[in-house]
Image 1 (cartoon, helix red, strand yellow):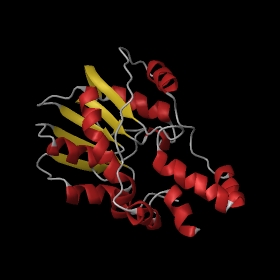
Image 2 (spheres, helix red, strand yellow; image 1 turned 120 degrees about the horizontal axis):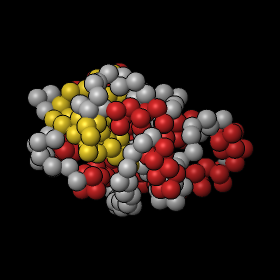
Image 3 (cartoon, helix red, strand yellow; image 1 turned 180 degrees about the vertical axis):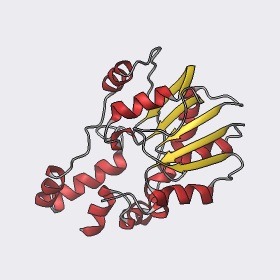
Image 4 (spheres, helix red, strand yellow; image 1 turned 90 degrees about the vertical axis):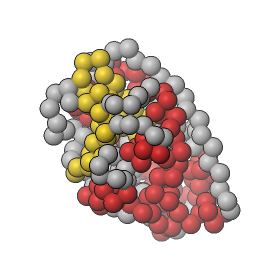
Amino acid sequence: MSYSNPAAYERFMGRWSARLAPAFFRFVGLVDGQCLLDVGCGIGTLAGAAMSAGLETHITGIDPVPEYVAFARAKVPLDRAEFYVGDAASLPFPDGRFDATLSLLVLQEFADPQAAVREMRRVTRAGGIVATCMWDFLDGLPMLAKFWRAAEEAAPEEVRRQRSGNTSRPHASLDRLCDLWRGCGLANIETATLDISMPFASFADYWEPFLGGSTPTSAFGRAR
């Protein structure tokens, strides 16, 4: 299952990423005038949120999915942002190019997280910021937890097959993220838990985005 339907993804998870982005900016401590890189930029959520917040920054985004990059280019004013198709493990930028290199909610999708973080460090200037933010899939995302509980009751065998075939990396704890950062040569490491509300206008507002099939989870829900 590939991530290839950006409009469906925006409705399913992108709207919550946009709600989270301002809290992420406050944690990172972004200021006007910085040059930012968004690794795994997807549909351009970080760039759009920075502009909505009034940050005077220039953002470069990179993502391996051409459909998402095209969606971001159409969504975000290109005088303030630019988007490229590329691999997080081999960033096409010179050493020290950016003041801050960020990654929002995609680290678990990288085939080689260590290589990606080392590349993020390489392209960030000395004294700059490298930061990521991840959903707490295990304990802090009721939207998906409720879905999987219902799926386990309705189709337990299919859920077991789905999970046994899931080759994605385990979701990191804060301790594991700190270990990853240290192992990639980063210092002055800080962590925080960022909370957002996820209000739904109705059951249809909750359920219909699953039918877009934009992620492996929503594709499983649509097929069943």
